[in-house]
Length: 211
Ligand code: URA
Image 1 (cartoon, helix red, strand yellow):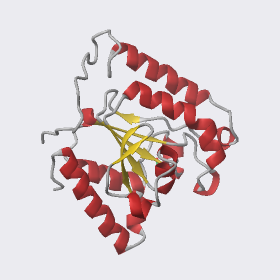
Image 2: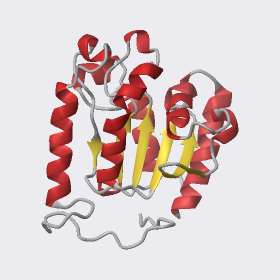
Image 3: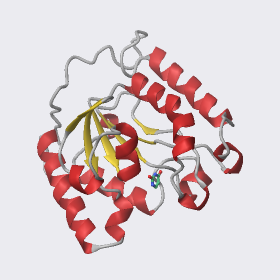
Image 4: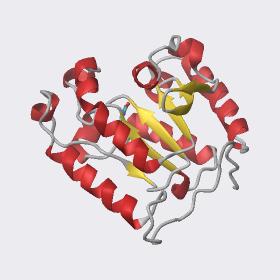
């Protein structure tokens, strides 16, 4: 299904061109260097308790980047973001939005699993340069935050996630479309309805339909 992004200016050169545009060889190589740095990071206590650092999955030249909070148990085990229950909800949503693999990427604010899955704000500050460098290399047109902590990290002045979700906003890193966290849809029918409603709004913005 075709996807038309709102502010998609020219993005070439693309993969293999040797230039430094999104997806170019130079960007891929910098992303790989950055991933190695993250995997070796021990700058905060989470680096000592994790099994694997969790860096990124998706396109090297995404139009949309989904930003979660922190790896959970399954992500920590496999070193890949959103591969547990939340991941299957997110993957289903992405498929329903009609996004092709080349169009999106998925990462987290925290690259290491916090004990008891409790979001760690101090660790998020230490980890922040990695996120900023990832986004500077990936250069998406749109960020989609998943959950309250991701929203707060990307837009410290945003209202609560229940107020902000479902409407695009101007954030320091570019246009941000907040969603509730996919795991919240497992907790209540109200959150599931909210997720569905906001996905529909996101689809409209992308020029697609939720199927
Ligand atoms: N929840 C998140 O926020 N991120 C993951 O990678 C998995 C679950």
